[in-house]
Each structure stands twice: as structure tokens, then as C-alpha cells.
Amino acid sequence: MARAETQTKSTQNGFRDKVMDQHDIPILGNFYTKAEVDAMVAAALEEARAIDEASMAEHNFKATIISMVLGFICLALFLDGTLRLLGIIPPFLDIDISIVDKIAEKVETEVMPLVNQAKGYIPRI
Image 1 (cartoon, one colour):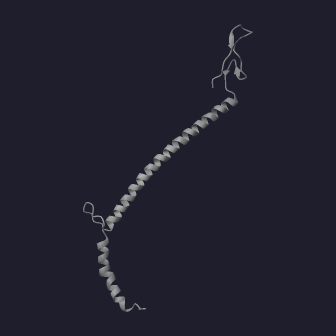
Image 2 (tube, rainbow, N blue to C red):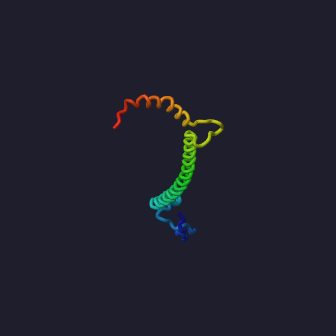
Image 3 (tube, one colour):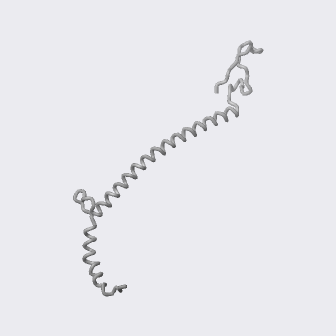
């Protein structure tokens, strides 16, 4: 904080000195009062809060964009794997993970004989 300095004629030594403030000590020099320090601290805290809020808003915006992109990529890869597993999309690099043929074969060989065997035991309405 800049203070206005006024010059007066000193009665003791004849030189022009600063007018002594309530917080000027000739040997120690100028210093700030508690009210001035509190005002400077409050201004610094307000500035720090404003900077913190601005940086957090920028960080949240960038983090949201990054999360959206990563989420979209993960969802696309999951859907791709699911569709390849069901045999809707052809195999990639000749790696066949389709389970539909295996399930159909198991149903024909293991489940259908049991169903045919149980036909006589199932009551009809």
C-alpha cells in the first residue's frame, strides 16, 4: 500500500523530514498497522480464492471432457466384444470368439436328449 508522504520543516534540525504517522518509528522506519495487514491478507485471500475457483473450474471442464472420451471408447470396445462374441461381427485377425455355434451344439447334444426323455413325465393340462 502506498502512502502519501508530506514534507514539513523540522523544528529540531532544520531539515525536511516525513511527517510522522501513528505507525512511523524513526529508528525502525515504516511498518504496517494491524488493520493494514488484515486488509492486505484479506485481499490476498480473496485473490487466492478467485484463482483457485478459476483453476478448479478449468480442471473440472477438462476432466469431464477426458472422462467422456474414455467412457465412449470403453463402451465402444465393450459393444464390439459383445457383438463379436455373439457372432454378429466377423472375427478380427482370425481370432474367433463366437460362442453361438458352441451353444447350439451343446443344446443339440446334451439338452435335447433330456427334453425328449422328459416328454413322457411332463403332465399335460
